[in-house]
Length: 489
Ligand code: NAP
Ligand code: MG
Image 1 (cartoon, rainbow, N blue to C red):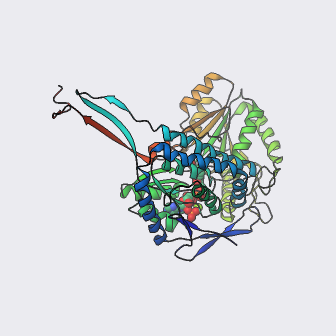
Image 2: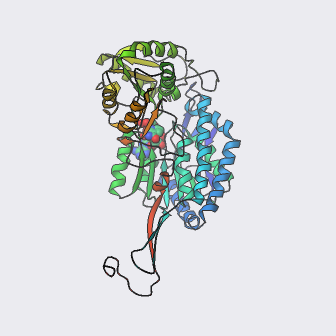
Image 3: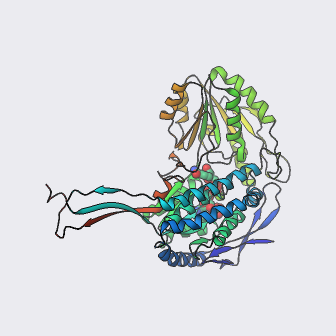
């Protein structure tokens, strides 16, 4: 049986506990291997290794650091298919989406390698003569990364690559469900020749290793993506310790379909957003806010197209919708569907757990949903979408903005005025015009407003702000004491 080990100080190693947990393929319930269940002594070793590696790495010129990232990008490219298959086997998304996810990591590697020659600061005129003023980025030190299972390599790449190119060391705790993809990524860092101790992989449960990372005095920064429940807990504890946190959490994303929209295009966008990755994306389309004039036509097309989706093992190239992650997820999703029915929403299709060995849920569409219903407010994280009728764009925007989350939104309209109004007034971190709620590109900031995050962004140049401190530097070459704000006024 495959054993997924820790990688600490450049060595693959057993956890100090000697304990392992099973890893299961959600498409068929078969055990793929077992993952290390580490404890604090393992984390301590990783912090020691990271500390000593970072003390050297911070002095390596950033363009030279970037050369390792170019190698990482090349190796990811070579291994794209293999990693995609591993990813599908352990978390279930269909193979095409898994390939796309690995591509995201490849893009991120080359993009962040480019940052080796940027990382711009400001050079500004001083208010005094014979004085020079500038700002530079410096690494935080050790970045603790805690990631979810639904994007096991993309999110790890969004966090580890900017951390490294800006001169930090990394300690990564991946989700318990997806250790094989994590090991494959770390092997690439190893093969790229990254100095030992710079990237450390510590498997283990969130409640043991995740919490220990937040507590550890050697880790100054926690970059987390996952549920709101856990993110809030991390923020409270890390806040008390005055640690830096970057938190990306849940969503309750909506697509708005106006009465002038291309309905077939809107249905393509909704299907892809709602049922891709079986609805288990932070950017999944969970609500469709539709103009009542075209509601019936949209519903008819959506039901017909949903019925055509082939459900099964994501490794089968003809499958459109894979399994959900585990039995608990199946039950949670079904619970939401029962709640929706009790609240008076009308079930158009789906609404059931499918029989068989894997964890499959039928793609589900509710209609006549009102904005305050539980199914229209809470993140379901499964293949369930709710249609909410409205009478105007203004009403659609109010409904879109009525949730506690603020990750992504989309609008289908041919009216440029409506498109620009939506761009301005939708209160999410990401807005799509004539596309669904998923499909972010890595060179723009990724993240959300309100309960989705705490103001930081993954990917794009904004990611550098998470992993660096600003240092303001003044060089006085006048040879005398010059007092700012005093001697020149
Ligand atoms: P999760 O349960 O919050 O887990 C995320 C990570 O946190 C896992 O590595 C988990 O470890 C760890 N963890 C659990 N409890 C912890 C604790 N007390 N302290 C520190 N770490 C802890 O989330 P998930 O179920 O894996 O992922 C689904 C959620 O992620 C959804 O809400 C989704 O919207 C969100 N998400 C957001 C984004 C975004 O960018 N906004 C992207 C993708 C997903 P274990 O695996 O061992 O539990
Ligand atoms: Mg979890």
